[in-house]
Image (cartoon, rainbow, N blue to C red):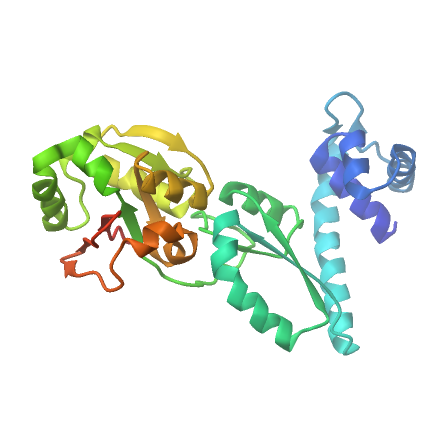
Length: 294
């Protein structure tokens, strides 16, 4: 058995389709089929039930479990040999959510490139839950994302702590509460990270539950016994912030991301050093902010 055939088998087992696996591997279906046939002959066992979609046999499931271990060891071997030879070559595949990659990874990549100029970085941008699937399949090397509770076989290292904020345009607040706007926003401050009942009528812009701020928002809704009015759901923080500034709804977003993602026009209309009242910020201009805590 060789490493190449093992790689082909793993991809085919995960894609469950000769067509999709061949496209992903950039080989013909005939080439892929020949490698699988060779593995079946060498192992003396049928590895796939050939219907649509493909299904692993009992022997195939055993083979897949060990093939993934061999693939990991093969990639580790390649990296260590490269380091030992002092070549400093290769590709580092980093998985990250699209908006977060724009903001968080830029300085990290710049620093890494200075110390390891021969390493090529490949960014894989997708939703959080898809990132963990890709990591489990060895399609990426590391992930910058909110980690699920249980990750057997994966080392999790804290990268950063951040607050989340709730953005709400003045125009929307005025339309919702009129003269009571100031009183309601003050009560938001006094509640210290709790949403007042008045927010039950406010439209919200939400990320998915697998996202940090999406999970935070849903927890706050539950704590306040609010059934939220959801106007838009999306993974694009930049788009959601613009919708928020335009008055489409209130939006939870990590505070560290807003400086880069918030439209410039909105930034110009807010104070540079907003005052604090408890855990709530109230900059003048287009936004109101609640520190949600992550």
